[in-house]
Length: 323
Ligand code: CUA
Figure 1: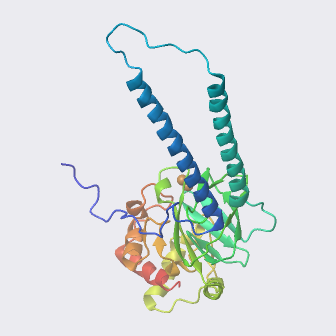
Figure 2: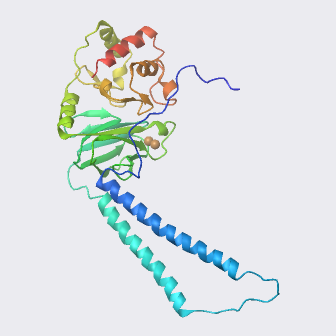
Figure 3: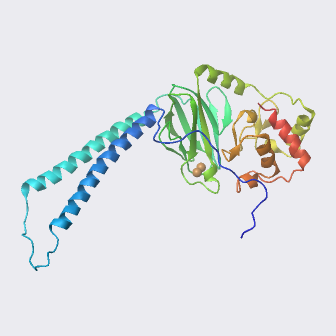
């Protein structure tokens, strides 16, 4: 009977968007799913055929207890040509399909990227050509293929949104490119698919595909700087934010905070998750996070500032205004 490690809530796992490779929502992901299904069927037929041949041989040529060998045969030219040619034909066909899928799933990066995604331990920085800066949540207009330039700020990560695109490594010093798109509006879950340290598992992201007009509205909101805090608690919260040097890591546009090593908080309260998917974004979770981020995400680079409850409440009031 172990003692619970903590009395505070642990990450409960997010119901992010759906994220099955079996329900692709873009031509890129669909081409990969198609190749998988064809290969699965071909291999299943071969597997069943080989198993049946082995089972037949075990029975037909079993020892019969009379001490005699079954009749021996040496070489069969026709059979050998058949079982050499057919596998070569199958493998060549699968190779041709694979090459075709690679060109469909990974078209060349032939123009300036629409967004730059920078992987960090353990969150995703997202920069749009329009100037929008966000984290862990990528809004896209549905039906429009977007070119992503993928970078890493520290170690190797891997950017994967199973329903929308192939996987792609984020490698320090070596930008990679990939295309994403969504044929239907909705929320699509993504994840880091390369072990990158303690919180690799909580390096999730959410892609929200919207009607182009909704996307434009979102983008306009995100471009607006934060305004002067309204509530009294929020004003105190901003002072705490400044006094505790939160701005050394986090940026809040328009308020003089320009840190670039942690998520931009200008529109934090418009997001649906905290800690790169470790928990939902709610007032309660934000409070838990600020009391001690290490409870929700042990090992993350935001330390426990040992803030008083009053300071935490003020900070929450401030951050809640950042819509
Ligand atoms: Cu980043 Cu695993």
